[in-house]
Image (cartoon, rainbow, N blue to C red; front, side):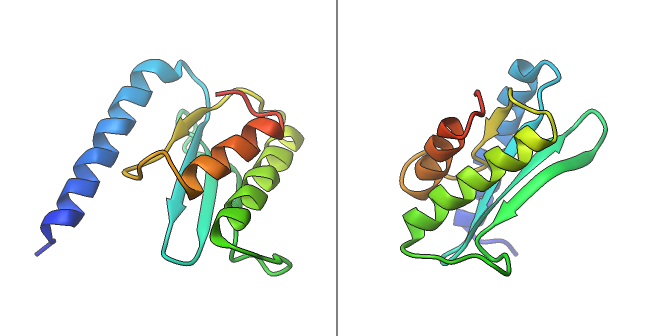
Length: 117
């Protein structure tokens, strides 16, 4: 049985995604997943059901620092990979995470890298 915190997280994530579907208008979704040590992000085209680009702090050549610095590096990586795939406008899906700390650092770095959301 799922804990209360897990159920609340899932409900919050579902609420965020429902709102995004109304606003998205065919834009790819930039979905963030974080754990206690790592952060990863995927650029998902929901219309086709494919992942366009992805980046993670678990990658082989990744040189990390603090968790916030890692999130910023991952944000820059996803912006570079999205531009190679020809994507500039995205919808930011924070999932059930609050928009501060590592999630905010990733979003700010992705914006600096050229993504618009």
